[in-house]
Image 1: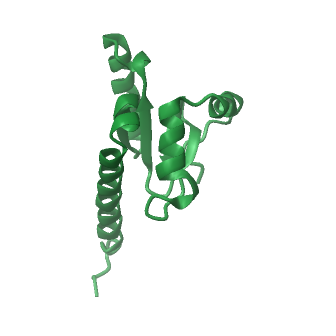
Image 2: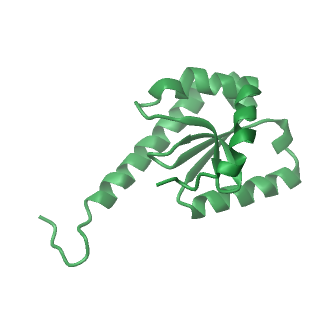
Length: 138
């Protein structure tokens, strides 16, 4: 399963990893890198469909975006909304944080991500406990 990986964006994603914002570096180093977040692996600057997402946990289909000042315009908000809609349609949950939130309130960002993961885990457990059609749950 490739989780909608777009190999055509691979080189661009690699370049993005080399020039991450201060907030993205902090989020990566303090919360997401090396299974720090509840032992889940995250990837950074991952091509999905026609987008490159900042961070993704493929196991949970959780996308985390760090939004800088370029996301503050009305036009950017519409692009982000469209992007989130497409990612949701592909089965991903999207969390967005401003760079300011990451740089000045990392504790709250951490709590929000952890809560989202717990909710996604509950959904995964519930979906696995549903028996296939024609079978009774034991």
